[in-house]
Image (cartoon, rainbow over all chains, first blue to last red; front, top):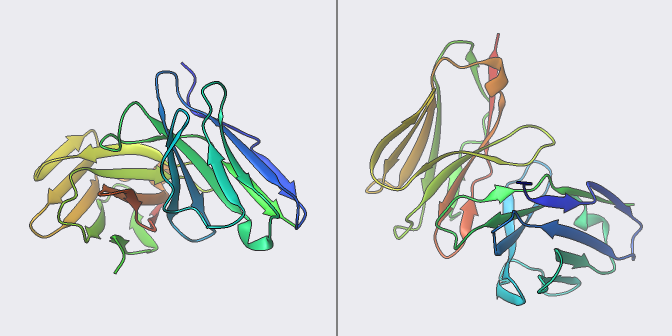
Length: 114
Length: 108
């Protein structure tokens, strides 16, 4: 039973390019959460999705960031026109139901904007 | 006021000692409480969950919850060098809130 799978592990983008981060939840998990962790800072909630629905995007920046979790395939976090401040570790987590239970995190994608 | 607050540390303890990590939270309606361990460059790993007042023990780890005082703590007995990591407190409210973490170093 594979855990939460994220790819790529490391992603380097030039300023102005697009970054696409992928997350496949654990088998049987239908709830996906994206978090961002800046160096020396805690995990910041970005967005909570179920299949084909965004449940809570209160942590998403208003511009350039979007997320989806289609009926088929992984969840995608997309960052358009990346800037250096977007450099961070992006973690995806999944759970079988709502947030009452602890999350299982993927290994993360380290985004570096040069 | 942050939803979840932890001392950033670093906290250093000698091998074999008890490490005590503390966390306070602001939302009195919070129902579920978790401790995660995060090694440098790795993802957070769930190590303890607690839902009711009192103590919960799992091996060398004990989580303590006091809802009246709005604090959660994690005790690590017989600390080992492999316990050296950052420990994140997480609390569920409207969202799943994480503290910034406490860095623990266990000195051999």
